[in-house]
Length: 242
Ligand code: PXP
Image (cartoon, rainbow, N blue to C red; front, side, top):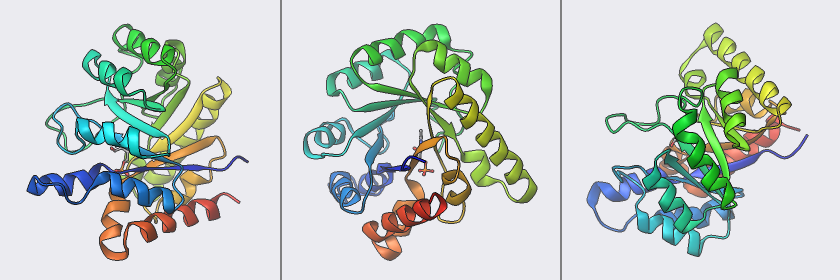
């Protein structure tokens, strides 16, 4: 089984910074620490309303960080232009609504092939690993494949929020989607809402090669420091996946 990569999402370091409008805490410093803690990549979501990560954060992350950068972005021409300017290692295309608190569901890949297809192609042609952030649903896996995206990220938010039998049912949906996705040649990632308590069953799915985790890690960092918070996640991921 291949090693499971950890992408650390640093958006909420910028959320805290922006609460006071200054320069502290610096998300780029967090990215350096993530590298020291054993992260395999850094993930940042440049939202259309710039509520946390800014354009200059993306520029600095590209210039100052050695780890691969995964730029999460809405599937729009404006965002595609920004991605083409910075040429991150990867782009994850997410749905975006201004009034939402976080990315509440996967993108409607199956319903937006005509609009998203050209954007995916442009990014892929520029050498960027494009990933579609989708619900664990065969239709969206097929649509992502048809658009030429090499990667999908399965939204684990509903699984993370559920409990008991419902959580088990949603885990099986994610597992089935991972198996199906890998079977049609997609690289499969997962993320959203993952914590120390719920990461193990997701990390144990052999077809999943990367997890992107942010909010919990930044929250836990308040108590134990960012490095220890990330190392704790890395350890749990490794234990779940011998
Ligand atoms: N993956 C994607 C595509 C996301 O949009 C987010 C949230 O920004 C995450 C992973 C990380 O989710 P969380 O912050 O809940 O760990």
